[in-house]
Amino acid sequence: MGSVKNIQTNYSIATQGRNITVNRIANSSGNSKNNYSLVNAIGQVIKSGMWNFNAGSLNIAVPHSGKFILRVGKEHYHIQVMQ
Image (tube, rainbow, N blue to C red; front, side):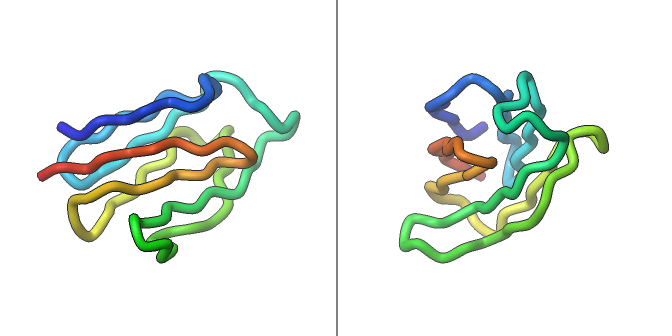
């Protein structure tokens, strides 16, 4: 299992294998949608898009283990994915 360092507490983030799951605890922007992006250690965007909180959890499959930064709205999280 990987590790997650939460910078803020509006989201619950868990890793299992090469999968990252994000759940909303509180809505920091006041609406039901936020942009997200997952960036690797050298600054490449791995995944990005719009997340509708009302649709449920955000699940992101990453292509390899390593350290990533997940940005959701104005918040960011340091994530380590291990296989």
